Length: 94
Ligand code: SF4
Ligand code: SF4
Image (cartoon, rainbow, N blue to C red; front, side, top):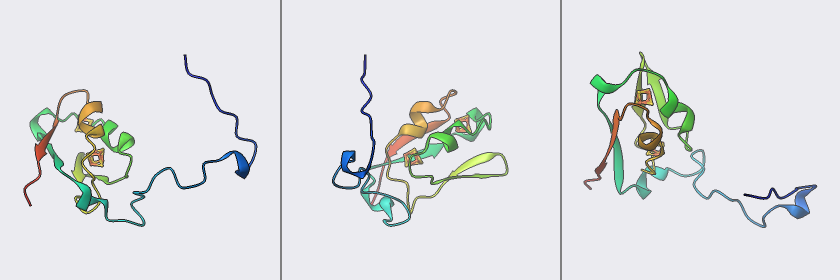
């Protein structure tokens, strides 16, 4: 069972930013070894991937998710959370 840490003020917070890859600062796409690829036939347009992407780099165009590869760091969260297996992670070719 996890125990929550109570934060009462700035002194209780970590001494540095927890995320070093904030998309508004870094083009995190350069970190990527794997890239998400949509299998459109399997997509039910539920937008769960959009909601879970930690870098907010999935846009919904029409009904389907579109990955912004300038910022996608290839973490695979979207593929993991997709309920229909409509996102596969493929090796990045540079
Ligand atoms: S989570 Fe999967 S099914 Fe839902 S919109 Fe994203 S790719 Fe499509
Ligand atoms: S792999 Fe998916 S969840 Fe991770 S940054 Fe890229 S689009 Fe977002």
